[in-house]
Length: 158
Image (cartoon, rainbow, N blue to C red):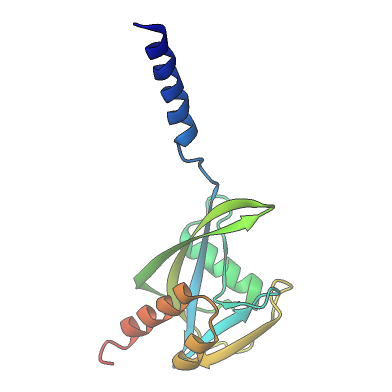
């Protein structure tokens, strides 16, 4: 093989390696769209955005265990009934210490009769809102869409 062809081939292999996507760490969390009859619980984060109770999987927890633990830690609510007929997965990327982190969140619907919320240090406020008001209050479009899907599941006639 001619030397210039060998160099070109070697350069293209190096370029292929340079063009490969760099894998980013993937975080996994689980959470609830928590309802009480026609109300939905939203939590406000210190950064100002509103979302649902959720958190990271720890150890060998399954998704329901994670969502239950996080709900109790963040709100003090421990009596919930999980609707195992509905689940949804969202993905997004955020910056952590200047590096991109991919996150996946597994969402489930749960209902409760406990309305009293004892906020953890992770949140600054909470609201029980109607589905319409909750959709307006949510910060991110992906979570508004999630609420619409949960509502359609819970009220198929509407």
